[in-house]
Length: 234
Length: 245
Image 1 (cartoon, chains in turn cyan, blue):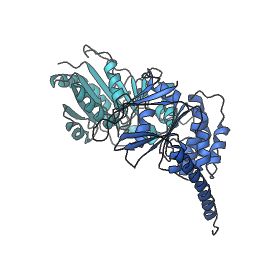
Image 2: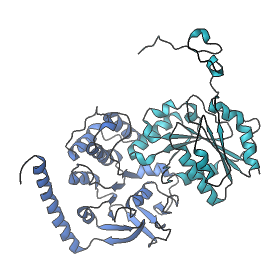
Image 3: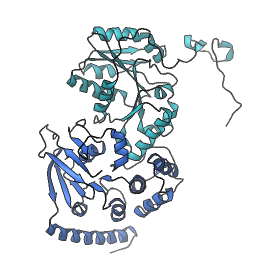
């Protein structure tokens, strides 16, 4: 079997990404959709145990010293091949959710960004390409806020992502998971992922700190180094 | 729209609910009652989310006999929901919050002042425009949520999950929310509010157990409870003011 859909779920830390995938995977199993799941993290994760218990092929990738988004993109081909060999038609990838500069989303994947309703009105604007380039935006923890707050957040997200579908979801009860699954199902299958491209460039590197430098000060800094501007002090 | 229809799902044990469907029309008021954990909040949440067998209950909700094409547009166009939340989470000033909600609801007729006026009639702790939304007390938050639903949303379907929480004036709040042209569902443990509704939905173990009409003799009980509420409120007022009875 070959993978014909890749769902890449990004979002900040602790916004409820794993909870969403748990509901989705359970719903996929009842519908006979063959899925595999991958969790990318930096240093450690216990999500492997969560996913392992759901009875689908699951793998954890720890990026260690490398930026987790770079690590994910460097391993995407291998992950798709692994999922296909494990009998999956659909690969779910949960990204690490650390800095907001990157989005590992590619042109042919289904790019999903989870936004926590409790994170504040300004939060969507801070999310960058993972939100602006998303096909589907999940509003998580909807049980924690009023309808008015949810509507204002959805409105603000719509301002910066005009085309993505916004789906409110409650990772505790599973509300919204079926709709999310239906929207994944409605997306076109992809023939293959060879020569797929990133939707947004990764940050410029490499500086001394990327390769293990620990000393502080300009004289130790080589490569692409950007300095803060003090002209517009507040 | 004229009516919504709830099509039966299953209870907490997966057993089929004991009804086929419930049709609810604009102009009706339903009280939703039952023990804690009996599924009251879930029922109105199902209606708010216009579920299509995609919640734990497996219910479906139709508007004028059909599934809405765009659920979210239908939700924000037709439904106002007051949940059990006692606090706001967003980091924004009260005035900006009301302004933003008026804007995204496309409401050009109401103003920030209208919402605050009602909120401050419901609670005795004054809410002002420059307050931080998430710093409001439970009573203030609740009053503002109610005023927002009454003034900003102006939706034909109003879902209320317990109004008796916090220090709010029940009669003023209900006066703002109830409207003869709307469909109102109110989850409550308060017999006075249960009897205000001409129909009541009784919940048990996650399922709708029965839908009952208010009888003529119950109307007399309603009058008794209304008088009792006035009396209790008076006593409460005196005790709060440090008076002896």
